[in-house]
Length: 156
Image 1 (cartoon, rainbow, N blue to C red):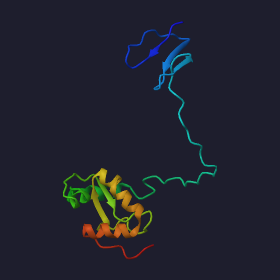
Image 2 (image 1 turned 30 degrees about the vertical axis):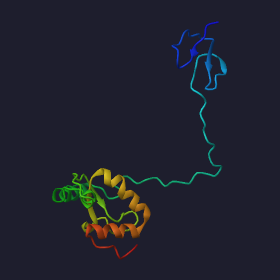
Image 3 (image 1 turned 60 degrees about the vertical axis):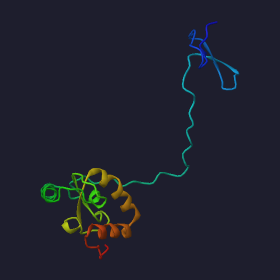
Image 4 (image 1 turned 90 degrees about the vertical axis):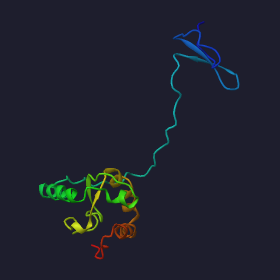
């Protein structure tokens, strides 16, 4: 019988398509049929609850990002080229995103109010800013204060 000896101290000897031998850490012998393959993996069972319904996301144009926004964004980035979030920590990064300090999907009427626009790099927008948004309005108010922006007093 041809075998594959899987001992880390010795080089493999023979490979057979029908059987192979391996040794465990404690030295016991394992004999397997077929080619060596990946061990089975653990896949946890999903919860028995029904999935939450998800509303379809509107297109960018339906959310307000149209030609007018593109022009306003370009103008804002030209006058604010540095990431405001990085600047708070003493770093300099090129701003590529104009973020709404207070998310307009939650707070209606802030989309076109440039006092709450913030120039950010993509890394800050996708990372720290999303965590701050998830913490709620108090965290957004603290960020507004750190950035020297007015705090949103009306909540709609």
